[in-house]
Amino acid sequence: MHCYQCGKCTAGCVLASEMNFPPSYLMRLLQTGTKENYDKILKSNSIWLCLNCENCVGRCPMEIDIPKMMDYLRTQSLKENKQHPDSKPIVAFHRSFLDSIKYTGRLYEVGLIAAFKARTFRFTQDLTIAPGMYLRGKLPLFPEKINDRRIMKRIFAQTIENVKTDTK
Amino acid sequence: MKIGFYPGCSLTGSSREYNESVAMVAKALDIELVEIKDWNCCGATAAHSMNEELSLSLPARIMAMAEEQGLTEVVVPCAACYNRLKVTQNELEDEQKRARVVDILKQPYKGNLKIINVLQLLEAYGTENIKAKVIQPFTHKVACYYGCLLVRPQSILKFDRVEDPQSMDSLIKVIGGTTMDWAFKTECCGGGFSVSRTDLVAKLSGNILKDASDRGAEALIVACPMCQSNLDMRRGAINKTLETPIDIPVIYITQAIGLALGIGAKELGLKRHFVTVEL
Image (cartoon, rainbow over all chains, first blue to last red; front, side, top):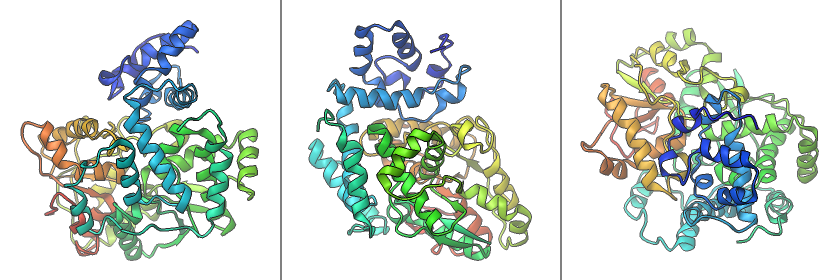
């Protein structure tokens, strides 16, 4: 990894200030190659707060694909069950989103929000905007289903559900 | 002109006005949109954050379905879907990954589909042709907001300038509008954190709106349903982070063009926004 710590990624990262440590620091930790530092990364909130906006890789003089690394580190963090508490609502959202696609093939927003609330106990969130969405025709009450739902089941079974250590 | 069309999930739900305005503008320009049969969700941020093979298989099926239908070019108005499809196409140039995905799908995947966004569709149609059809010039000063996924990563998307893109600005000028230089053209709005971390979305989107507003923008023009819903639907939360509330609307490029082509506000879905649009 040819990062020479110029710091451009951190300078351009919109959520660097919210992270346990910013992207350039994360790169340095990786370069040390120690198990301890790797663990520190997997347990950090940095990997979960990355929005994959791709600003860092766009500006990196060495073209290091940090967002892709973040995807990998998130998966590893889940596998080793080392997620930072900040990851909870984010992972709950991703899981609710993916559940919806698995069963219908398309995102069903009402189902997504209901599942997210059930996972996070945030029952009162967004109660003020939901009626507005419905009135504006932005919240169809019934899911759209694709015809070939078996393919969705197969894709999920052979990918994300195939990872045995991927705990719920 | 006839072209394949992948709407994606947001366009059938919370961003249906984007779909409506794309359809109305396409009709006005005699562009026939052929929807991909039985299309599925691209997986968005959720899939690539959780599992790589899943994040490649979902877009691959969409493209395999389009290929099966005989389509060679597909327009994808949602910036997030556009990004996922393009990135997947690039990743699947790797033989091993492609073989694995084809094995999961049990469906042929050639990988030669041309994927374009809505700005590229309008450019391909021809700015002069659009200009000729303008009935009501869009005489407003606006900030064109591209966000992340339309322009990055540039090495894969190969679309426009990465730090200071111009394609949307050019289209606005063609229909009679004025655009501006501003600082947040490609900054992230918070994207997929809309529900899970609304606080962060409010902060990031607030920065964007404030800069545009300070420079006198009458509206923000976007080409991404996530940017639009964060900047519009989340305005209540955004305004709580700002000293002075901002009430400038956020509209899609297709809605701006639609107005210039003389299409009614209702047909363009302009009544579906949370922040009232009076343009």
